Length: 325
Ligand SMILES: Cc1cc2nc3c(=O)[nH]c(=O)nc-3n(C[C@H](O)[C@H](O)[C@H](O)COP(=O)(O)OP(=O)(O)OC[C@H]3O[C@@H](n4cnc5c(N)ncnc54)[C@H](O)[C@@H]3O)c2cc1C
Image (cartoon, rainbow, N blue to C red; front, side, top):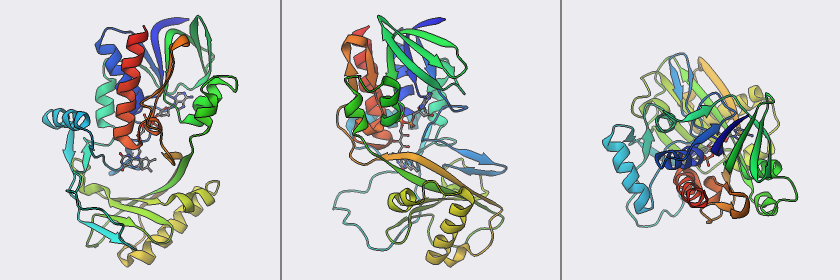
């Protein structure tokens, strides 16, 4: 059995931010991720010449701390601004009078920055954690029956899954169970020819869709005509168990109703289900902590939602665990 200071479950923004913080301070960290690489909901999928950011689309910075981090990443060429021609379909929400947020994307895909965070860290991909148990140290069991031992544990799985891992008697169980995550169906479309629209990105406030984006207008995504479409939470939720092929048909139909320029048949057409996309009512806790067992639970849902929330939750968890070790 391998022993380490901290096992981090999940190589998304929260997990890798915390892991980088700890590793930079000499703490030994092992990251366990069930997917084949880092990114989580901030991912890029490639199909031949096409690239699709099928989860998070871009990020914004509200806090001074995140703004400063973004400046550093921009300076290092890891992040760039995306300036799409924007449209709104349906009623326009009241957006207030403030200056519009800068929309930033990681390069060359939404997981680009996380790949950089993961460099030099001990990351185990394609490894699902199936149980965790505390008895003076944490015993973490993986799907392939191998085990890890650590002094501290950070869970960044969605709150329901973190609750299941900890079990019904754990003191954080009820709080974790209480955080609802809304689903989102995403549709990836690749076209042979340019789709002649007067927008590169659109917020949709009518029918079943929520967002349409021409992915290839983001920096470093290549020139192949790739689009990402998201359905809204209500539409996705009522069809969550449907067959992806049928979902793709329905979403394409909705898209064509809104914008007839999508009449041509795409050469790539793939639906992806995000079962836990965004928190309904995110907490503003930073991270959840059980100091006695040196356990932290973190994620976007814990700190105001979205990438900035995941980052700030990861920072909070890294600092709290460092103080406990
Ligand atoms: C469709 C969609 C659109 C979005 N749009 C935006 C946007 O435009 N702007 C924005 O700022 N945010 C957006 N978000 C939200 C953003 O993607 C998230 O806030 C952020 O990526 C969350 O990071 P995280 O580390 O908290 O969680 P995650 O990225 O979900 O990371 C958790 C990781 O844990 C892993 N994991 C779970 N269980 C286990 C286990 N048992 N064993 C091992 N590994 C496990 C998962 O595979 C995952 O990689 C969007 C999300 C979705 C789904």
